[in-house]
Length: 314
Length: 321
Image 1: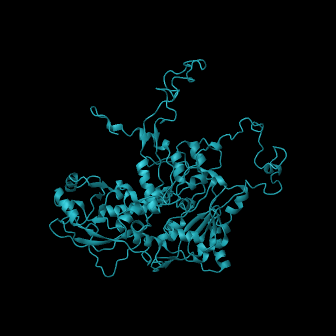
Image 2: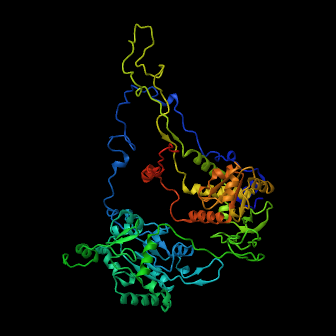
Image 3: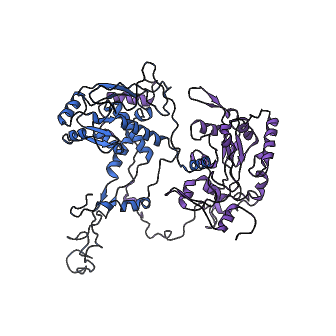
């Protein structure tokens, strides 16, 4: 009796009990509480014409003195440290363990590229641009288990080759993914493009054109042009060289990329201006009619092409 | 390449985790696997259908645990009053062996009874009554009680002080999670107390005779009231004619399944197709990524509600509310 779970014991009891009818169901004890009734003592309590009644009352936090100086207003704000607290960027972390868990449980499909949009669609990962969060930070916790995907019956074990696009990645995390045969790219999304990427449905329902991604700010250009971080602005030969270098540094054999079935998927990269795979910036997605509206105006085309020359009118 | 890219794009558009990935079903070793999920769908009523012992695909069910009994149900047929079993079905434990939360069922039943209530009555206060602006008689010297207005509440024909005030609704939406749990609990209780009957199909009922259905129910020890559940909302002819003559036997489509009906009716008779449909839908919602706690705002539904009676104007009859 004690070894069975509560559910099993409850169901065994119900099996022997009479049929459950509409009158046999009720709330758990303590679920609802009666509201407080207004009692005679709850009105002005004899203070209708008190001297203090019409006077100014001290604010919350008042510690005896000026009404304008409660405790929370006495001390000035931090001016010698954390001055740029509101300007700092956050990258909510995603560990390799979590990523593996999402793949194993069927939230993510490793046969398609995994970018910020795919992660946010699972609703298991959250990135909020309004909180100065700039994207996914790949951490190396779980690097040792990342290569394996095991079926429920324990039958087959194969490497998770993923095409990952994140915003920040540690060296060991990159190594773990590449060792398993996958690909990592770090890409910058400016806040407006990030808002679209994080919740595409909400963006499309607004009826606004897909934004174009702008280049990273000055302090991040160095990060995203560096092949060691697999930056999206680094040149592909430099990225290849960095791959081999990392393999030598950490000490693993780079898997050969002769598997043609997944080659196309692993080679898929977004254009530096592109937010969604298969959709170009400037297009308007009409969900109601399931159509795409593309701009024709040359000025718009020039803007969304990202060309730097000033020939807007051509 | 472009088509694959479009595929990547539209996956990004999907809000919730879509079609779940199915895992291979575990077929019991002592059962033989016979043909087909639709037992008796194409064979004529004169021949006996093949018994169905194939294991059902229980999506993401914990089949390895030994701490939970695996719920199963007989599959019978309505051809004859004798209860001939034509199969044994595995049921999903998340739906048919869920914790019996009677308090959640209570909340569902209370919600079902109250959320549709609309009060159309309104009593008038002293300010809304006609007249009553003038002091009817001076306060002193009259020998009468003081009066300020002939429509004060203490006057005959005066306004009502704390009366029923205007159109009011008790509308609220119970969170999706609670409604799902309520359905699962009610199905669990029905199955556990032997009040759930699964039948291959309702169109195998041989005659529209109400007496036949009554005898069948009597022979099989069904309760006084029986609820037949099928997927489409057009009922089979024989069943509809038979149930029309028996007040306590009613038919309902799967989209009308609710906790109140499941506990009002003593027996629940479901088709195999309805069982598959219900399990699939309930499991989809139990496992979806979106929040199960939605805000229901009037302004989102306003246009739909105001246009509800659009095509229902009849030149002769008054609208039925």
